[in-house]
Amino acid sequence: MHRVYFARPIIADKEREYMARALSNPVLTDGAFVTAFQQAFTDMVGGGLALATNSCMSALQLACMSLFRKGDEVIVPALSHVATAHCVELSGAEPVFVDIDHKTGNMDYHAVERRITARTKGIIIVHYLGRPSDPSAFKAIARKRGIHLIEDCALALGASEEGTHVGLFGDVGCFSFYPCKHITTGEGGMLLTRDTQLMAQLKKRRSFGQKERYGDVPYLGFNGRMSELQAALGLAQLERLPYFLKSRQHNYLMLKTALSNIPRVNSDESSFYGMSVFLPKGMDRDEFRMDLKRVYIEASAYYPKPLPYLSYYKKKYGYMEGQFPEAEFVSSRTVCLPVGPHLKKKHMRYLAQTIQEKLCGSHLSAALAS
Ligand SMILES: *Cc1c(COP(=O)(O)O)cnc(C)c1O
Image (cartoon, rainbow, N blue to C red; front, side, top):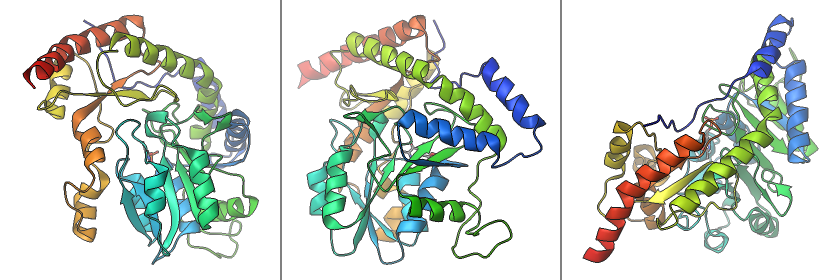
């Protein structure tokens, strides 16, 4: 028996060393470490301009505040973290949900194109579990229609399509450094854009909308900055990203082989955030998760409920169950298995074996029964 956590940050000497250095500097926010982290980030993704924030939600919100306003419609996948919809709502625009495809967890771009109206001002794509959501196709649609594209890359650090890192296709890409993501700063995020003018605006909005400290305020904004301590942590983590990614890939491939008979959302070409496997019909997701917990395995749900079915959106826009069958299918019928670098061979073996025992028999009997 081994303990299989869904995620555990890996903090080593380098992190402690950088953080100690940050602590001894007189500037504790938006200083040399933040600048170095932003620079290292653009070097890693291979282009664009980066702006560190205190969360991915802040990054998304700053992007939406800059690009949308009241009366606009913004297309959002029905299955994502609630931050992907809330950022639109907070800008005054209306999130318009489009169902995902259960094979990939991503939106189909043809389906999205059909939903574009005269009021549509943008699309937010989410790279589900780190699988690029056809960013070049979405970029082409956005160009053709003269609307904006935002990439929610919270689970996709390290993912690319034909050599271009995700986050560089849209007007803006937003990343998360929350503890369970690919790298962590405790809390934190990053904005990525190739647009110098937009970057200047994002930067002001991130500091209360101010032109410079104590200067005039041309925009609405808030305090979305990252501290030096967070950036020091992030810089050390980023240096180890190649190892983290390799380890995730290794663990994912091991699971893929061991569980080849179990249907899953296909994240084979991704930055390997996790593996969502389908449960047999009639098996309750949360009961199954509790069942795993009893044998010390943490499995997660990506995501626990389709966004339009959350009370806030249901109440405000009148969405009903049944309207987003694919999002419902993935949400209610999959558990996400961990593949993070904190898991060694013995953990992965134990995980695969346990899932095989618990699911295989059931899939088989479900198949025989139907
Ligand atoms: C985790 C996550 C977020 C939120 O990130 P924070 O840094 O916690 O704000 C946003 N979008 C997606 C798709 C996520 O998975």
